[in-house]
Image (cartoon, rainbow, N blue to C red; front, side, top):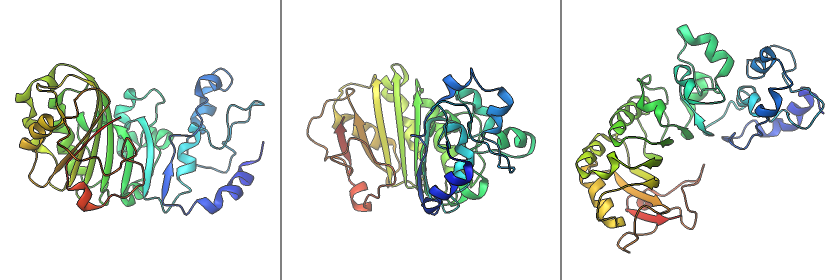
Length: 292
């Protein structure tokens, strides 16, 4: 195993990168819990203090690129603009019960400063310069309230949720507006809700979508949607309530029938919008439907 300094030297040419995907970092937490004491595991995500916070057991389970080192790794990327976090990362420490790895993107400071120092991934300064985040827990924006202008430059955000009642989107949209005042593309990746999304009268909630949005992308899996379950009918239902300038893009593997009335997605032939990929405003201004 290399020392931390050797790892730093090898990776230093990458530290000026504007995009970072931490979702592919190895996760050896299940194996490591049996070998390392809890206080050491906590130190792996604390701020660097001159000690070597690498995993030091004699087996190929942990490394500099282990998820437990997320905060330490991210702090090296001072020019970070785009972050692919992970689908189970909540925004703030008070929602850490939603994430099995007990880590959050940010700290509110104040009373949770100690918690934030131990488990947060980004510093406030890094958050303020981000233009894209993929993917946070949708419940982070549905429960409680976010701080205003936490992401003042963020134009693209992906949130993921399961069993999300459609009414919860009202709080999600409100908190997105407060935290991300210039947000242009919001992607909601939702699955496994078969009650509230079925009722067309609940779709008023899309009228609360952030006014800054240019594109709202709905990725829907295993959802019960109103009849008729065709792509064009569902698009008309959402668009009828959404702000005039917000275009709706729909992606699903099985919830709707493609009746051929909507164009293909701007990200085709990819099934889903791709991290750190730019899409022309003219393309986002056209509705789309795609199966994946």
